[in-house]
Image 1 (cartoon, one colour):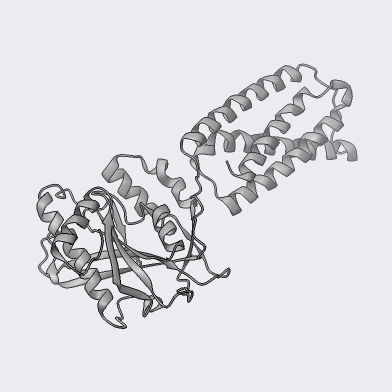
Image 2 (tube, rainbow, N blue to C red):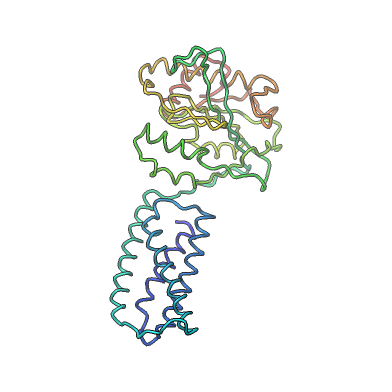
Amino acid sequence: MRVLEILAIVVMLLVSLQWLLPTNLGRLKRGTVMGASSLIGIVVLALHALIEGMHWQLIPVYIPASLLFIWGVYKLIKIYRIHTGTAPAHEVDTSRRKFGAGVLIVCIILVSTTLIIDSILPVFSLPQPSGTLPIGTVTFDLTDDSRNETFTEATDDHRRILIKAWYPAEETTDLQIAPYINSPSQFSAGIQQSWGFPTIMTSHFALVKTHSFVNAPLSQASPSYPVLIFSHGYGGLAMQNTVLMEELASNGYIVFSIGHSYEAAVVSFPDGSAIYASDQMYADIPGSLQIWANDTVFLLDQLEVADNPVIPSLLHGGMDLTRLGVFGHSFGGTTAEEIMLKDNRFDVG
């Protein structure tokens, strides 16, 4: 769990303990403790929402914590009114200790539930890459006007693919850290459609950060870097192997991952549009293999064009295409094998 999440839970438990404070402490003092703790809790929850981001796994904590904190502030206001003489004082009701014990038990149950859920589906952190080079990332798309899109019936619809690249970058601290998921709502919708997970179960992926900087300048530590091209698994995602891509980039490789449209769970383009997995994606697997291989060849063709405007300019001149590899996961690995058979420009695969 993250720091402010833990702190919010601790404050909530402390507030719930107020009902168990000794009765001889006095109503005003006990209420002041609860009110002050509640104000702290409200600040902690607000900071958590603004800095870390709220997520569904903590709903069992958010609701009771909010109610407890509001009640505590109410008590603080009431104490202030008693102190100023604008509200009557009351005798201490010792039966409230039983109620307080019940509140504490409920809070402990809810916190335990939250801890279990959050341990199963956490807002995780990606492992730190082992390389010494900072990492940059850029996302773009390519359209192959020589190929019609086989998954649609429109005759003017040409093959469009997503490309996500990771590369060694110059040291920078003023650029945006890339999120793990570029388009969270599209990602969750694609996962639900392809894999059956409810969108709420993947919504917390939007809070995961990477170790890459968006559009960072290419590192000048070397005049050029070897190039690798990756294909995801069937029904997978272009970003599915981000950990591996960052590891490679930090060690001096430029890596391109292809989002194979209509056969990825979702392909989210930089312009905000998206292509989800087709209902017909399993109709012709051998044909799909050729489509994916042609996607890879097309990308390499574009990379070989000097100062190609469809390739981000920050990569121009930095790619050593005499040191070229291709790899993939599952069906993407099969695609790599096909590429090695049909295109001798690739050295390893």
